[in-house]
Every structure is written in structure tokens, then in C-alpha cells.
Image (cartoon, rainbow, N blue to C red; front, top):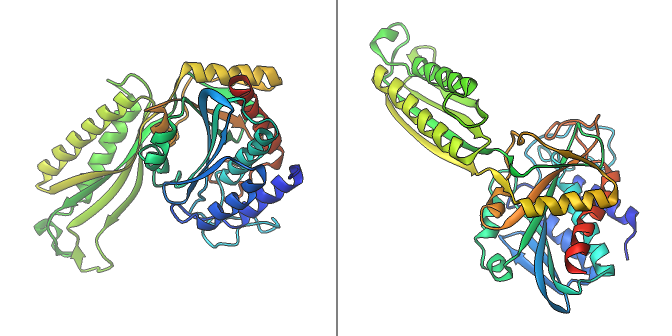
Length: 378
């Protein structure tokens, strides 16, 4: 049976060989091989590269699921002195999913040594969290439906917070968000006669300025809303042409699902207004849609009880996190909770090229999940 050093080595291997969403074939294989030593009762493939390891109790009871994520990020790591730095150019584990996987694997070891007396436990290694809503694929899968989990738990490490501090919140834990792609079409002209064409840049500028003013004022919304300009594409490298086509992407966020719906409606109205005023054709579409992660109060209390039993630090958050998480698709249909786990006050931020998950979180975070498991299934 593996000791803590073996789990640290697993984390380093996962870090060295990251894979992007829906391409996590080697990651999934490594996890499968490592988990077999704990003799799960079933191993189930789900949502493409995902894995679920099932430990069955002897008697009927609750089904509890613990989730982690398989995928890395399309970002170049900047850690030249790190022995296990990413071997894949432009891909890296800068969000800590290598650590999250290792925590759940460590939980598997603890469960194998204390197998459930009743019910069952599911250890889910979920694909495609970062960019493709892999949780939605899992929730909609027949494999997940057959298991019918009663409670779901997930953590996310939080840099800037003292290590082994647990952050919890009833209700909305992470923001709802979506990306809106806006396309404006005007008319080209010679660059010497721009007044004879219809350059959409000026309307695009007014659109984003008004959306920004809307979110900064927060007027008409029940809670915090955010807008961020992600990109803008206009014209070609041709100095004789005033362009006609523009595309821009804006991320819209809100702490509450209803506020995101309202923000989208208001943004659409702003787009239509300025396009009409300038005589432009306009269209828009949505992508990367994430609801708010809504924590169930019973599950929050289970996390609080486990945290206090272990003597870890506890912070009850006043506001949700501004980032989004596809764990929201689980909490939309099942009782679940996602909570924060302090990764250290001096730790670089998530998605920072110098970020590296701290190995000394693996054992205490695994013990926290195990404490929740013990109280329900032993």
C-alpha cells in the first residue's frame, strides 16, 4: 500500500504530464493504475476520459461522491528550476488539479483501509473542468444517473489563504458566468475615404463602455456583477482599407443566476441599440455557460463539522468567489458543496505561470474528506 511519498510522486508525475480537456487519456490511465491497489469494487468510465471508483458497503445506505478534476490549462509554465515542470509546451497544471487528484487518491487509500459499512462512496475524476463543462457531461451521463448520489463534495485550493484553512459559504459559492461573442458588420471603404464606409469599431467601443458602466453601477441587480473584455478582432493588415467586420468577446459574471440572466438581457439591448444607431448588422452568441455553484446548507454543515473535528481553521465567507466552476452543474441537480482550502499566504495565484500546488496539503485535505465519509458511512 502506498505511503505519503508515493502520493507526492504521483502528484509530481501528473504535474509533469498535463493534458487539456477531453484529451486526458494518459492522466486517466495513470489514475486507473494507481487506484487499483486500493481494490475498488467497481471502476466506471464516464464522460469520455473520466473515471469513477466505487466502494460498496455491506448494508444499504447513502451514496456519497467526492470529485476532483483531470485537466490542465493551455498556459506555458514558468518554473525553470522545478524538477517536475511540465514536459508539454503550452500546457500546465496551474490550477492545482494535479493536487486535487492526489487528494482524492489519498482518500481512496483511507477508504480502502476503512471500507464503508453501509451505502457506497464514489471517487470521481472528472474531465474537462477548465474549458468545456465536463461536469455537465457527467451529470447527463447514464452512469451518473444509475448511481444517484445523495451528497457531493469538492474542494478548490485557494492561494493567499493560510494553509489548511477551510472556506465555506451557504448558497452561492462561485459566480455564474458566460461568454458572449458579438459580431458587427458594416461596410468597407478606402482608408483615404473612411466617411464612405461604416467602420464598426466606434459602435463596439460604445457597447463595451455602456456594459462596463452598467456592471460598475450594479443598478437593478441584487448582487455583484462583472464584465470583462476578452478580445476584439477588426480588419486585416491592409493599410488601404477601412474595415467592415468586427468580433469581440465579453465575459459576463454575476454572483446570482437571476442577475446573470438580467445582465445578458441588458447587454443584448445595448448591442442592438448601438448597432441600429450606426446602421450595422449585429449578432451575438453564448459559450462557456456556468451557473452559480449553489451550496446545500446540510452539506455545508457536514464540512464545518469535519473541519472543527480536525481542528483546522474555518472561514465563513460573506461573498461568493468571482470565478466560475462547472461543479455548479452538480449542485443544480443534487445536494452538494464546494469549499475552499487554503493553499498558503505566499502561494502564487491560480493560473499564474509560477503556481505549483503545495504537497503538504495532500494528507490533511484527504483527511478532511475522510472525516466527512466516516460520519456518514462507517
